[in-house]
Length: 236
Image 1 (cartoon, helix red, strand yellow):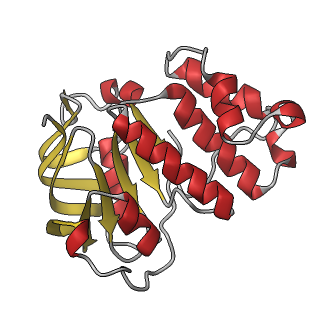
Image 2 (spheres, one colour; image 1 turned 135 degrees about the vertical axis):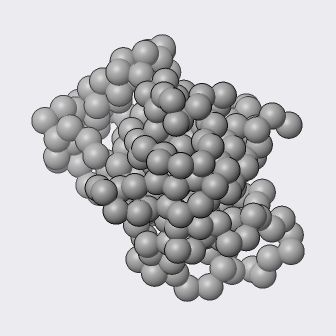
């Protein structure tokens, strides 16, 4: 399969401080890969590099055929980053938030209401300002934005955070369907058993480096063990 993400000895800075120190990572088309590691290991920084949000200071970084050393902006149209924290415009309604993001990414607007409905955001919720929604409802709006944009690469940081059991099950269905439709998905999560069941490979990150390149999920124990608190990230 074609390589969607190819990072070779990548180093990156965040706010002037080292964030990644020689990361090697390859993710193929239609693959779901889990980044595993404690808080501060570099999982979120890898996602942000792949989204074109963190500058690569050394090494080679190719995402969807774009050379991130030369041009970080071009890739953003084809990538969707969902952070642990939902960054939405509080003074806009749920539908207006999704429409704004879709237009900004120059994607088609035909999937907006369908995507919101799939995430259970319909009826009066469509026209409710985001600052009046619960944390779980806000999370669903963020995920509906991703679904409506339908980017080729999904970068998900703690994607199940803030969702109830039904919401988590629904998200797992959506992720699996997206992969079957050709989407490549990179997840940073401490959800343990749930995430292991969902992904094709697990990559361990520590100290800003990849310490294991990935183990097929069938060889893993049923749970990854305890993790520290999740890292924060932004929604692109």
